[in-house]
Image (cartoon, rainbow, N blue to C red; front, side, top):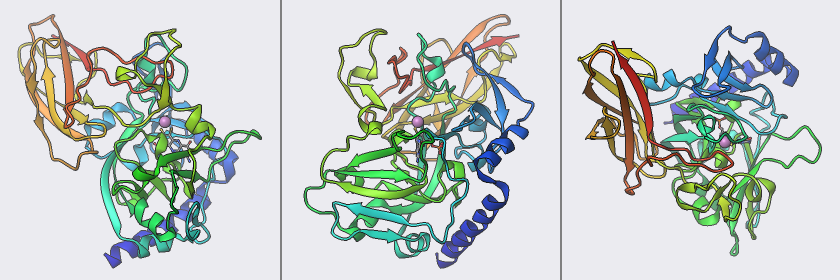
Length: 414
Ligand SMILES: Nc1nc2c(c(=O)[nH]1)N[C@H]1C(S)=C(S)[C@@H](COP(=O)(O)O)O[C@H]1N2
Ligand SMILES: [Mo]
């Protein structure tokens, strides 16, 4: 374990050097990304879905939604290659444009303050050496993943299905760090802030809060590694919060400040942004106004076919292997059901290795391709271990959150 820790710290220092030499300020980041724009163009399967590919520092080719602050989507083929999303192909989402282009690992401090017995400041070395390391596989998914599929259309980043990824996170329990500082009686929430800022004066700083009970559970992690390596800068180097089972709006990147609050957090990002309808399935009718809104929270189950895409041609009347990924949201995957006849009949798929309830789970099964000329509608759905099942009808809300409708993939037999 000692050796592992040391090599991680060395990895972090090396990383810092790479950042210093490749990222010459925000302007450098911009020109770097623009000059390396790959010739590739992709068409996400909805209106105005044409996108270019781009490569940012430490990242491979990703689908470009916006340059500054960056919104980069994982090309869907990546999810067919494995259960863990490679760091360089992991999607990227930032709200504010003033993002540090390097972080000095020696002077960096994680501060814990507010309604605590003793405010503390931790170095990265202290975090790595003085606390018990923990590891967890967990899906990081944007609340607005798949927003581009909303009908009627809604405003916001028009993601396809690639604003999600699964990684093995290594770090320390938030609980252990909070204990070191000592929470005072009367604490109600814990607020997380990162190093990013707005460029326009008065822009609300990006901060998110969890209830104290949630912050003190065993599962919330302050991660310093992603798939065994330091986090890419754009995914939150050197530290980010991992809130397993919850939408990634809470997974604060470049985490540098933890504040224990004795009253509910009323900052913009908690009370105005990231609200969902408190209705069944988070759905409302287009135009509806009179509903209660609450902060978005737990993820819902989803599943995808990864080895075919809509419109693919297959050989008629052959046995075909089909596979994909599933996740249960805030619970494990109990079952994945597959249909090759537009949902008339369903059969359980075989599940792959279980990396824990918050991870992607691979599934696979077979079907018989239809006669020549036929269109064949494949469908897949997950039921999670709480018994929650993907809906047959798409979620709709004006913010474009939480889509988890059963996916349909139409193949043509030739
Ligand atoms: N500091 C900071 N953390 C943040 C954000 C941000 O804008 N600033 N965006 C959040 C949102 S909305 C998403 S979807 C995830 C994206 O994580 P990723 O870029 O590592 O994929 O980061 C979350 N953490
Ligand atoms: Mo997000």
